[in-house]
Amino acid sequence: MIESLEYIEKPLRLQSVGNTEVACFGTGEENIDKVTVDSFGQEWLKFDEFSATEIKNAGDQYFDIITDSELNKKSRVLDLGCGSGRWTKYMADKAGRIEAVDPSEAVFSAASTYGNLKNVRFSQAGVDNIPFPDNSFDFIISLGVLHHITDTQMALNSVMKKLKPGGNILLYLYYALDNRGFLYKLIFNLSTIFRKIVSNLSHKAKHFVCDLIAVLVYFPLVTLSRILKLFGGKLYLKIPLAYYRDKSWNIIRNDALDRFGTPLEQRFSKIQITEMLKKSGATHIRFSDNEPYWHVVATKK
Image 1 (cartoon, rainbow, N blue to C red):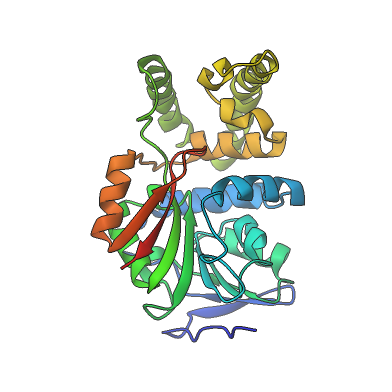
Image 2 (tube, rainbow, N blue to C red):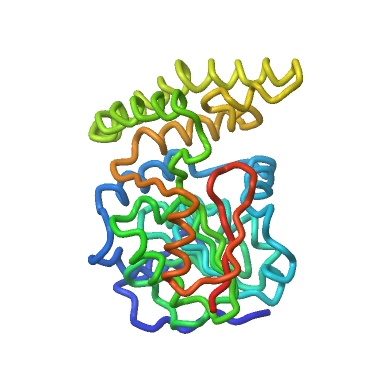
């Protein structure tokens, strides 16, 4: 079995979570929005468990462009922004060793749920203070994380330093609707105004309103897309939120909270993501043609 890496600094404290010990390094200070980190901590404490089927189905979508040569039993992996730990769980039987890192309180929930995974270690740290040596990892994933950071390019540069030359990163950033039409973008932009209001509510009120949005907005549109799909053709793909047509109610509620409850959110076009990856030292950039948009794999030079 691949051994754990040595930390490059001493943790501020060690916290026991069941039979698991989490090394806590803080969140970093330079490039992090602490309100957003706190919001995600609350989100993942609410949605801290996903079924094996939910994890597999979601993981298969994100990892559709990953080959066995890029992720295998010889791979040392960094899951940056592990949240509830579902991607760590998805990779556990595919990777050699996984370091699961998150700046929020969610890391303790992840450690409690998946602390039994023998090839996984959980640490609390931010993108500014990833507690491992540079050039350490064969494979890094950061799914739905770096678009919630103040300076995404700076964050990506920090992450790429931890990847070995020739290693690969699987990245998912919110897309700038660059493959959508005018009406779709208009509806989305109107919803963004509402998000800015909801995201400033108290945790309790925010969770209530986002559950209400899931019921009154997500559910009808998802149901409509499911019905249209039964008639054949691809018209259902034009329906907002059609992505959730095959998702569980648990994931729909979670993502409604993620979309409307998060204070800081940025979106990037495929061209912008390509440019950021190149600036960070990446090459062989490959985007998936499938949802969710955009997820991409790239290799460090």
